[in-house]
Image (cartoon, rainbow, N blue to C red; front, side):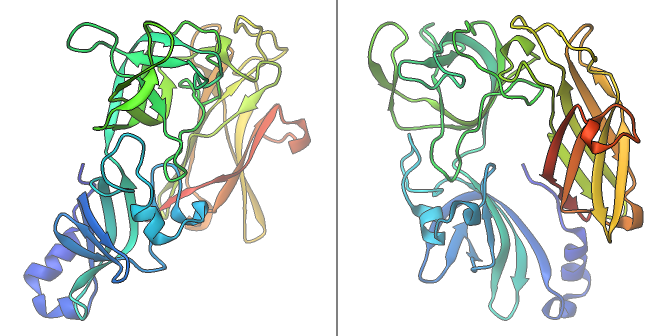
Length: 352
């Protein structure tokens, strides 16, 4: 999926080629990672030389190289991901953002996002056995759809490599849930990761032990729908954030969910409703506290889960690095009265 085309850069190339040597040209590539040579810091993407510098941000969908503490070479071509043929991200997909350096005659990357493969699995669970919250205990398994012979389809297994580690299993609310003891058969799900070309040991759904076969290795595995009966935190209210995007000079959008306390069966048993009060985005810029609020809306009739969207124009066209999100009784309530809070959530800042 090609993200966007730099029309301004193209105009410089085709309309005023003499200026190309004076003005850096923005470059974006998306394609296969063919090789990486560490002594020369050369990443090859679709046959194109890309220079990787110490300042280049290397990331995956779940983390950054800096956050893992890994060296560049170890990140690029260290241990093989489970179920893959080549080391590291080789033969995977890269999205390169950088500039063309005319003097060096090469692309210099400012940021590279990598995945072993961009595989998405939106389907139905047809076989499962779970003893832990994330269904990852010894003997646990989740399988999806069916194979060509009609048997249970590929196993879904979490990625443990720190470069692309799977998080907790969630539903659409984004709150952590527990699958322990739950029959998931017939439940729709959404997963992202890669389908490994190499056989790995997975739990045999027809008896004890394991079998060797290809599997879907995920870094995201969410149930489609809302399942308050599976919430891990049932005895406390929560507010979360799944989107905080600030577009400089344009707008600021924050989305997420709230939930009240619930019974073991997932029914609300609180003195408030998910629609009570307001959800408030708070941040400080130039020593001025900013507060923007919006109510939550129940995701379904009688549900203890609510969704919210706070949308506003950031004063002074200034975007903060982080925000605090609090579920308050009123827009003017003290923070100590909050039903629940999420603190220091990072903001995605965009200039387009």
